[in-house]
Image (tube, rainbow, N blue to C red; front, side):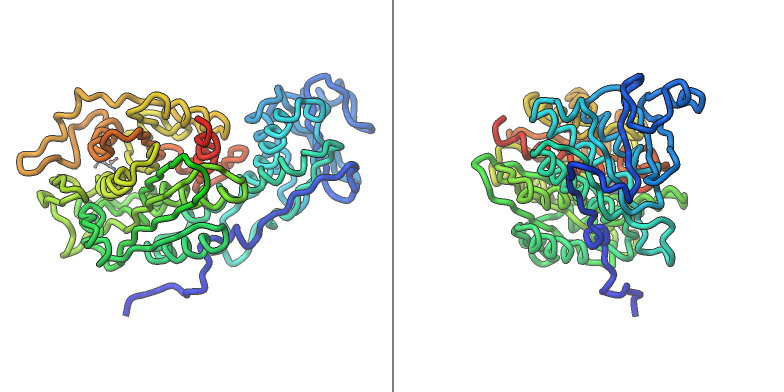
Length: 490
Ligand code: BES
Ligand code: ZN
Ligand code: ZN
């Protein structure tokens, strides 16, 4: 008998412990309070002077904080400017100053209360995101929690729209934390079948239509890439189609959902780092999470997601090097490296998405180590066949502070993907691996405007760094929500 996990295990624990947010005109004085202060700006009543604070190294600069003992405990958090990114960071600095406290009150600085309403909404949303993202921890598999789960954020403001902006920030944080949960869950606890069940549960809760396709249906649809990657596994593959129906504009999302990437017969070496390959489904996870925010944020774009889910395992039934797979639509691909599996499952998804003639397709995937090597862990690689779409993705990324950097779809490298026996090879030469993978995907989108986001770099944080806490970052979940929001009118 195969080892299985208790069906009652919850792969999305953060949803059962959602923190709440509220607004009040005056602090209760019973829980820790944070004040965001610019250098030399007026300090709250009873605080030390700037001269005294300078002696303990607090000058009001971004990233600096000082605790003022007393009842209530107060935290002064430095802030340099009033941008969304700065507010998100300041929220995270405040929240991590009181890791043992389940509640926090943040006083909105005068500059925010006096800002024009649209700016104020953006800043307040980012502040709430920063607090709630920074206090995320993945604990369901620990016998004892180290720090208590965050429960309630109170913002002190006399402005009416602050409550709505804070609510939107909480939805955004919930979205990223959901993607984090999915990617942090070990592969035994979250295979493709369970991911399908989670999607159905989320669809029910958040007003989405969810269809889950099993192996026979995948064969009927001719998804030779997904089936070929799954061939070595004892687990069944799934394609999960998630739809949100709203406005006229149609956005299609395609996600790499490799629940564990061993490399297949091109086996990865036994390196502890490869525990991260449980997160090789973050593309699919971030898309699924993003879908759950659309109704709550009244997004007026119709969005359809295609999540291509399986693990990539070696066995007697695995796809072999030299095998040829037929992608939906008939393109044949010679598999020269079974570890370049993401592009095989995405190819099927991109063909399906393109068949529905959407206004744009965006795929998200932890696709290449080369993207991590090129840009490091702070930026995703962006590729696009359409400048306007690329700019929309860049703008969304700037607004959520999930950095993307565009790399070229350089057609001069296309010849490296030729095969003697098939239409394409699934790998090229040794250099420019992120570009080669993108060129491969480009073969399957036809003329539809398309962007590809390779999130292999920023998928994971190896340290607590403001709101980017250790573990899966959930990268791109908020970016995709923001993109769907702006796509309505652009
Ligand atoms: N999932 C990996 C890429 C990856 C590496 C993601 C590091 C996150 C962190 C992908 O399936 C893979 O193994 N790619 C190969 C492609 C190569 C065989 C052409 C790689 O990048 O080495
Ligand atoms: Zn791989
Ligand atoms: Zn992979």
